[in-house]
Image (cartoon, rainbow, N blue to C red; front, side, top):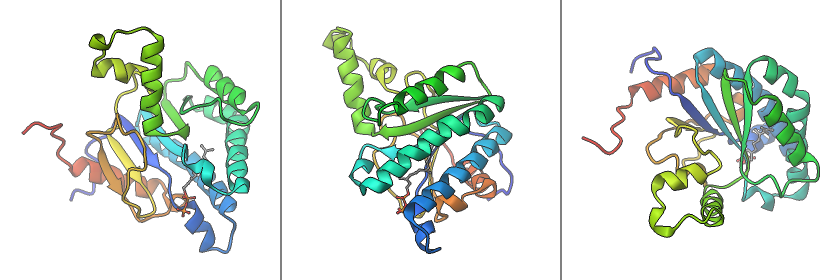
Length: 233
Ligand code: FPP
């Protein structure tokens, strides 16, 4: 396999897995693992800008993650809050546009508003579009799209694949070219199930807090070695 990056994907999506195991191996709490994961995300956002990636989607909190112990759930919510408060100025300066996919209404009081504020402030930035998947599930996203289509009064015989695409949280965002999952788990876990049908998947054993620019580079090289046929011969 070539050691050079021969193709840059437009849209990279990442399942940031392994914070808990990273923490356990160091005798730390799971929340400390998530903090390390958040720190790592900062470096990966910068690396994506350097590589010329246009869209980055990160799976940070799934619709299933509510079943985790309440101190972990609360700690994760505080981490999101600290990102949209303390990292906002820096992300804005770097030209990052923040978007959100998932349902904001179930978030603790005030947090949804802070996320909306970050989206509003950064809405004209074009260097990197960062989608934060928070309270996100692929099946829930399809339910959401169906609800919106019915609310809009679109007749059943006019519903096409494009209609559904346009009513998902991601709307007109290009489908992910490359989806990376860290930590050695080889599952899709309800992530971008509509958009990811022809994505290339790269599974790496590296735990998320250790997934640095060099590891991202390796994933991009692997992506470049794949022949994408989109169902054609
Ligand atoms: C999966 O690892 C990780 C999560 C459920 C949380 C991901 C969150 C972050 C990286 C930080 C927050 C990000 C933002 C945008 C504020 P795990 O806990 O399932 O790890 P394990 O499988 O080793 O237990």
